[in-house]
Length: 90
Image (cartoon, rainbow, N blue to C red):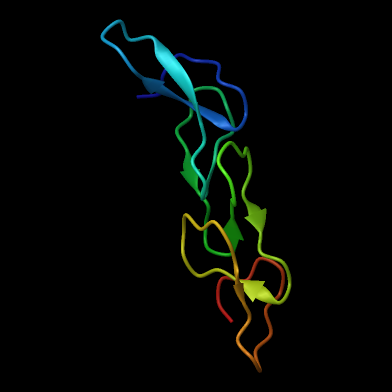
């Protein structure tokens, strides 16, 4: 269930004690957190979140790619391949 919390963008709510009061925590690296009470969303292939506390995942730049979810960086495009912005494969 979604918690009744108003966490800022870049954070998410987690129950921390028996009272049921949520605590807002920094979004983990490799994920984005839009705020409110929504849980972290893993960055999809072709995007990344380098550090904790981000509200959006960034697209991999042209010349790089990322084939995995929950990534904290992008990989250089394979020599002889073309990688457009947001590529999930070389």
